[in-house]
Image (cartoon, rainbow, N blue to C red; front, top):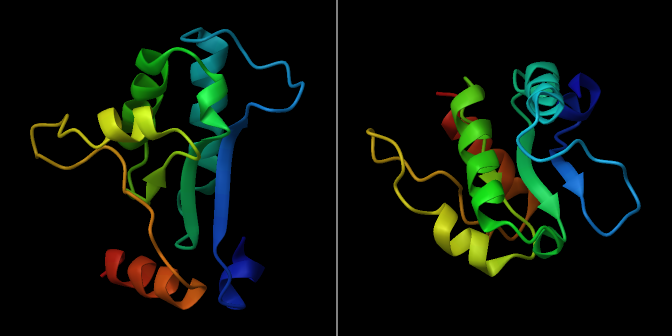
Length: 127
C-alpha cells in the first residue's frame, strides 16, 4: 500500500466478491465481524484506500445485511475513507440514506473519472 501510495496509485478494496466460489462467513456472525474489522484495521490508515462492500453485490440477496455492513464499515473506519458498493443499485439507493446523527451519508456514490480525480479527493479528505 505504501509503495502504491508513493507512486500515486489508489487501492480500491473489495470486502467480498460474490461471483466467485468463496466460503464467506455467515452473515452477521462473529467471524463476519472479525473479517471486516481485520481488513479495516489492516488498511484504513493508508490514505490511498477506497472501500467497496462487494463486487457483484446484487448476488447477496439481503439488502438489510448489505446496509448493516456499510454502516459497520463506516462506524469502524476512523479515517472515513470513501465507501461504495459495486453493481447494486438497490443498496446504493438505501445506503446513501443519512443514517448517523451527523447526517453523513453511509456511502459515497462513485462517479469519478480519473485516478487523478481520486487522488485529489483523497488528499482533500486528509486535510
